[in-house]
Image (cartoon, rainbow, N blue to C red; front, side):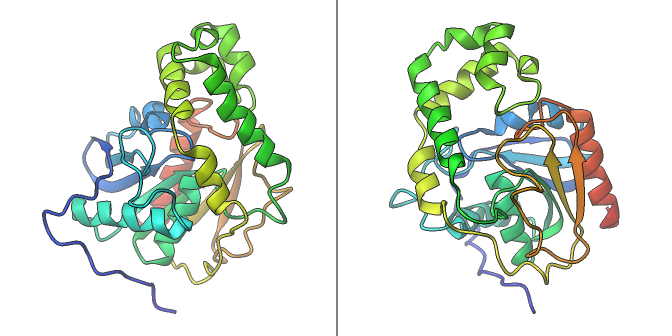
Length: 272
């Protein structure tokens, strides 16, 4: 099956996707999960000088405006906008690393032929059955951020971050206080819940013909996605599955060295 390719945007047409760019070398695209911002990749970016690395704010999060008309009808709508950014950067393809929803988008981009390799950290889109109690987990996450208020005093202490973020991170005390506070502030004003409802019962399909190296990295302390409730059956036969011990759903702050090692292995498998 040939990859699905869209017509590129006209030169000079902005994608509207805010992003942070670091380093030089092979193109590397970093995609965060729902409710987060590009800053989730901060400790990883610090270790990736050998790549031309771009960490994005997905549409509706951080400094990126929402999609025209509001929420996406499908993950494909978000993927369209990230593909626009690739065109804007002049990248026909890139090594793509995604966490949670970002991992799902990475699969979609690979399906379209835009990936040199894919490293998916606790990716969405692979769940078996309904979303069940995970819906309530997200509700608690968002409403908790709103209840803490714009200054989120609970997150300014090591103990507070440990108590408040232990379901999301394996080692939440490692997150700098100011980033944790700003994350909570951004989450409280984000379209996380309506966006979640629009994609809740969907799944990634049709990825068995992806030809590039794919790594799925589950996290041992992730209550949302893992080998017990997800399947890699829609991914290609060459998919490598690894476990990130001691890490939570967002492993970038928990063990950035391990995350970088896993993505470098995936890039190496692509000959990069």
